[in-house]
Length: 156
Image (cartoon, rainbow, N blue to C red; front, top):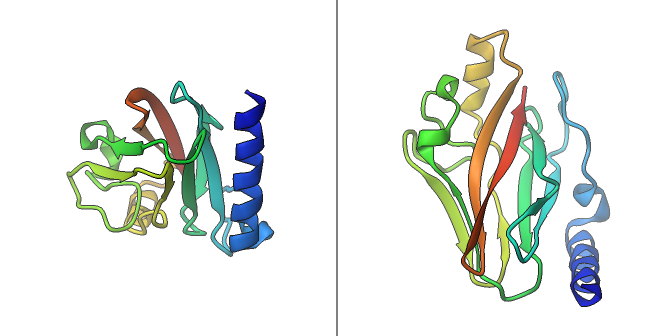
């Protein structure tokens, strides 16, 4: 356990140095927030449990996520099943580059996955539905073949 914690700290320090520590510091996104995109780190333990469990992203900022497996070189896969997209999102995936009505997924044998920015097409969902302030996207996270559900929350 101590070795895993040491590796996670080392990975966080390396990531912070490479990207600039201010980009790795999570901010609370919320209605009306705009500014610089934030990279939100999510660690996945050996049981495929995410920490934090819920990751809140701001559509106004174009935030992104980096998922990191508990140790280097442990295959990691993230899959957003289109059947679980919020109904109000009209089939739009959570991140840029996806196809409407199709699954969106990422994998990396090295255990680190960077998402694209939040899908800008989701701005239309918020604009056309004034009472909607958040969209919940459930995803499957799989490390070393062990799967669990995770969730991102996209905020207006």
